[in-house]
Image 1 (cartoon, rainbow, N blue to C red):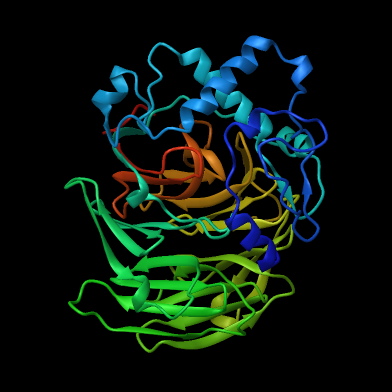
Image 2: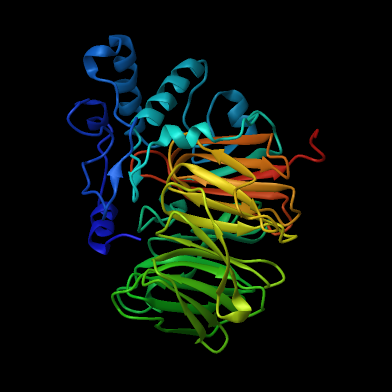
Amino acid sequence: MDERTVAQQLQQLVIDPLEIFSVDNSRLVGTASPTPMHGDTLARGSEPRATNTAPDATWDFLANAAQMFEQPAELSEITQTDVDRGFDMQGYWWGGRAMQRRMYMEYRRTSYPQYQGVSHDVRLVLQQARAVDPTSQFYKFRYAATGDQFRCKINHFQLRDLVWATSSYDVFYWHADGVHVWNPWQRQQKCIVGRREMPESFRLSALCVDGGTVVAGDYSGRYFVKSIWAENGASASGPLGDTSDIVNHVSPSCKSGRVSVAMNSGHVSVFDVHRATVIERSAFDWAVNCTAESTTGALACVVGDSTNGVLADPRQGYRTVAQLQGHSDYAFACAFSPDGNLVATGSQDTSMRVYDVRWPRSAASVLCGNIGAMRIVRFSACGRFLLAAEAADYVHVYETPSFERAQQIEFLGEVAGATFSPDANCVFVGISDAVHSDTLAEFTRIEDPAR
């Protein structure tokens, strides 16, 4: 993980949509020139085209698109009927302008900043990627809500797993005034954990909702726990480590009432949410950005500020069982398949690698995105699908175990979170962006899509 001071700078970053089209070869367009993180560099191939080499008509269109996105979306609630009329899933009108949208998305691909903890050539990563047909349809868009009340607040641009679903009717996300729950079927949302209930100056960095309990971590190494279904549910808070530490990720454990906490100090803590106690703490040689346990609890995956992930045995103090090699940069996401045979890791090198834990020497599949780092990975409970969310604009749903077919879901803006419902019948996506429409969207599964 990276320095808190830089994260604070990026949290304050607001991009002027007109500025991003003032192209200057001397710097990366689309940013306010944030200071690179420790060892981070801009990826090769990310420099935009110079103004004098692009057709005037192209840049006129891009300038017009920027002006359009200064305004709120035309619709605050969007259904499939609206999409059929020419609106996109965020309420912007694109009717009859499919080519212009494609041009705008291509511009975003080439100008989006890519940060590197380990210097590497992204083109070499892309050469390893499996060929995938991205035109499959496993889930269909049903409903989306936009506006400030649906903004999933991102406090650190590398920590994105901020949307959780405990059913098809209960979608939790981090908002500026606390933890909110959204019911897309009743089209209602409400705050269930207010900021006043949390410790003073609690700046959330990680969120987990599981078993009727909200578990959150912050930039000062603290936790907050609250039972959400009981009236006046009990809550607790306290330190997980040093006050200079950051809670990078919280994930459910296979044991009820426990979660695994990834710490920036290089520790994995097993936390009992009922007793509000750290049961066990294991150390690694690098900052731990994410952990995941198999359903049996026999294996855990640990990834962080290393190009290698680790398969470990949580029953033996996270003793290393195998190294997961192949990434060219730091990883921030990992997940096991329900049967425990596959583990997926998402990295800043723009790739997701899928390993068979029985033969983990090399990745069985390498899957690459369009715009940047793979920030979120999730298997569906049925095991048929693997979800991967990029830092912005794209969420992919791959069909396992071949990974030859996928559904590509396209938005405009930073992806704060993406997840399946527990029954795998729904996919939920949260978009949080200073320029584009803040959105929570729901997709429902297509019955028996053609294999």
